[in-house]
Amino acid sequence: MIKTFGEKTGFPPEAIGFLEEQFCILQQKEMMNSLYAAMDHFFCETDEKYLDVLQEIAEKTGIHRMTVDMIFLILCTKPLFYLYRQKGLGEELFWDTMCDLKYKLMECKEVYNVWGTFVTRWFRRFYLCERFKLGRLQYETVAFGCAAYRDVLKEGDTVYNCHIPSSGALTPEAVMDSLRRAHEFYRPEGGVLPVVCYSWLLYPPYQDVFPAGSNMAAFAQLFDVIESKRSPNQEDFWRIFHCEPTNDLQKLPHDTTLQRNFIAYLQQGNDMGTGLGVLLFDGEHIL
Image 1: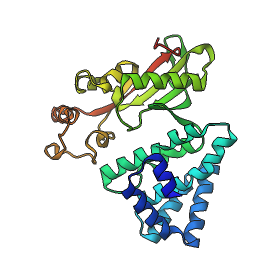
Image 2: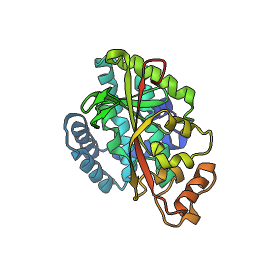
Image 3: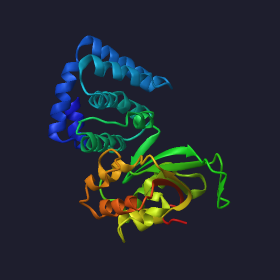
């Protein structure tokens, strides 16, 4: 199953071989029973007991916890496939959405040099059929958490939260194509798709850090940023430098213009941060 899934979603051959080897270790009765128990909690309960079970599996087998989590999530794609069918969701949508496992696999390898994932909690809404990849972006239905926006949205209204997977260039063309797909998929009441995005890309001070004319700058400019906050703990540090936060800025990779600009930004004593943005899309244009 791991080989088939990995090939379908673009896992590197080295990763597929490694994960298959580790899965062989897990295929003893006790470990498989524990994995099935974790799956029951993952799909059927609101608690996070599945995380405790996965930790126990890692401790008993000696397999890296991040690897155990990735194998677990791959195994969970089988029942999820049948959930998609039950809900009338297409197979193409399933595979497009499940490619997020590959993106997180590659991030884990880049940051920790481990074939696995370090953001297991992130995946829950994918497996509950609440988050989907539609073109370049991912979307989920949420309640608007602010008091009001432009006399169009009020607190509690349905909005569509978008996420930006690390799946390649974030071109304006790809973003607009994704918004059109989302509009067609969700068919919003009144014809206007209210999209919200909470991301480091929308932190206002970064407009002076992003390379001029970059896709990141263009993406941020699509949104009306209504809230922002500093993140002194530098929680998005790894997204730029592919490593854990450090105060030793001289040792950071500086291979790209973005990395060099951020090093200069941090050397000036600035904090990292995030922003919450809103855009309204009518199926063809941002209003």
